[in-house]
Image (cartoon, rainbow, N blue to C red; front, top):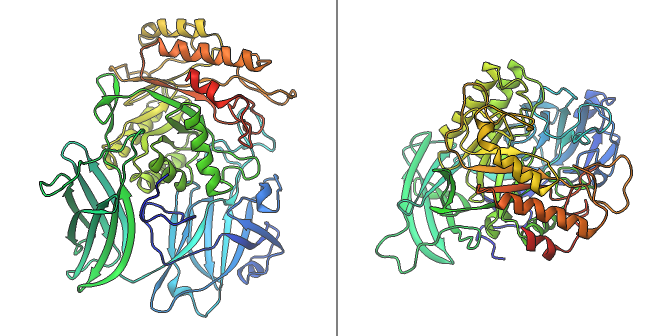
Length: 575
């Protein structure tokens, strides 16, 4: 495994790395809603919690699964003389309010995107009291994914996540620094475009990009940062080059390193590291094309849950292990389901050549407020993860959750289609799926979900596909398109199927799809028959449910602790 030049272990933002940072993960003071605000603002909280693990989890040190509407955190932080201090939250659910030394800094609404506060002007001494309040509830209107909104787990919904559940960290910067960077590679002309924003644009501010590959310099470019947004494109195939331009793909994850310098008046005031992959992934003429070549997606549905830590990876090693196990079982990617994964997952997918679908965690009731919040949070998610070459597909809705009347409801159709085009306005590189599974509005890929457990019957369902797209659902639960939308020759992917229940020592509270199998042989026969049925369908791929068992679900290929239920080589033979 080859890391990028800018890699730092445990660094939360691997696509834009600064060395001058402080990880705030670890022990914080903590309290529930019964704490008085005046005490919380002074850091006087009765409990201890291990950040970034939510209080509901074992690794938090608290492990209380009851819903608490308000939680408080406190920790002492320090600034750095002559530098601005940026406070970063990679994920906190749902409304986060930040105070320093009792003064309000700001508020963020949402759960699945990074947000940052400049706290410099609130620091008054060597050690300062940082207080964080998070408010959450069981409202199904808010974006929540697989988090339950009842007091107990039910169906395929699990224990809720409240408060800080991803890394919290400080970085120290000059008042003139890089705020954002969008990296767009082009396989068509072997180039890369950098769109950057600096904090203080001025006539004497420049941003320099030095590109290297395998330690050898490739190209450099400098762009003036006199405006809010600046753009520069760099060709990678100059006649002066003495190497073959490399493409990123799943069997050869070639990555270019980028050293970034912000200069003011000729002096370097900010230094960062990044990287990119030269690749093209598109839906075209009924096929998925990866670097212009037809690609067959062999994906696993990945809920990204751990028994001891919920939706928070317990360690960086755990992230790596998940990807390695999926690859060993013969899969070339995952559909991250109803969560936005820790960005370090995308990093390891980048360096290992593993494709990832990124999906908006669903709300479950429609409303005007939900529409407004979804649009804002979704674009934060898209912007944050855009640069990762492993990310190949965006999924807006899943199985009509949050748009449950989309077949007939024009407003819900417009929301799904509007988010499709809103995503495309920022990202023209990737396919976008409006409603994964069925009842699509505008969509680049037609995805279908079907949990038939008999391979022969499963294939028979596909035989009826053209009746399906013409409006005859037959035995299928849903039609593939909403009213006034129709099949336009999109690539087809069976993006959920299987989900076969298999656990040796089960009880009545566990479930999976179909009648559970009794032994390894029965599971492998059923798994193999379903995969073979899909392979005969002449479609663009599949996504099997799922990587691991999750809480009450026992339909994973792995147990919650990532032990294998069956030999990985036996799974790989059939995928």
